[in-house]
Image 1 (cartoon, rainbow, N blue to C red):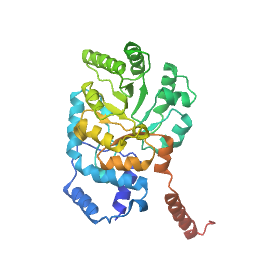
Image 2: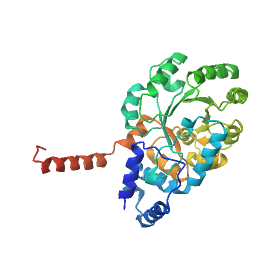
Image 3: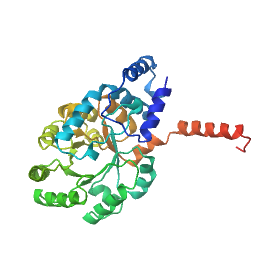
Image 4: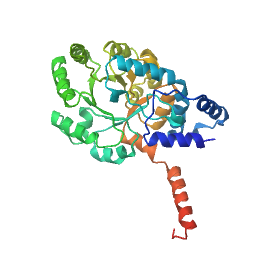
Length: 327
């Protein structure tokens, strides 16, 4: 019973564009319901994290068609450019809001994972720049920006502003945004100075009739979702791993944040960061979350499974043997 889901997942990985304008046919909904009803339960220990993640978002796709359409309509009212509401294909052809982003400024890691084509975007911050050997500067932002969009499927890149106070963060954010107001998003910490800077950016938008994609970052509490929504942030980014490090139940807190922000119907999308493994993505996907930024280590878990590689080698060997070629 996994063949239909595998076919859908292949379409998703290929980055086939989905059309939010077309509702699913009755036959498609019936097929999905049949798939869910007939799929045997299996212990989590017997199912790979990446396969379970694909199943989780696939099953959730049918339930969110109506919400996706409402979200697209709201995006239009907010005068966001069309490219900002581009959606990736879901398994079984459903349109939804899944966004996977690679969280690194290391070009070697970009070259390894971004050509695979299933990433929606890239995220960066001063720590990641420093770790990759880049100076934290506007020139580095410009260099990374120019490289990012040479990869297939990349729709946006989020850079974090920096500065000692609201005015400095705001002015830096303006410089970052000016490079490409459509495809660059600005990350701003959820501090008091950061919130002031975000409000200043929003005021600029109101006066100019534009919409800056703001990501309020360094979130540690579900309650901070109210502030992000009040600032009309595009994203809010909670740090799952760091929450757990501090003794918090990060999964529970982020699930509550998701509902605080209105779930799939909310104006502010929860972009989960500081993920330590793919299994955490699976658990959050089951709770309805659909936007994740993660390290190359987690990306490796999604794309390099020994059993999958062994199966592919088996197929290739059979093909060569059938043609009488050396194996």
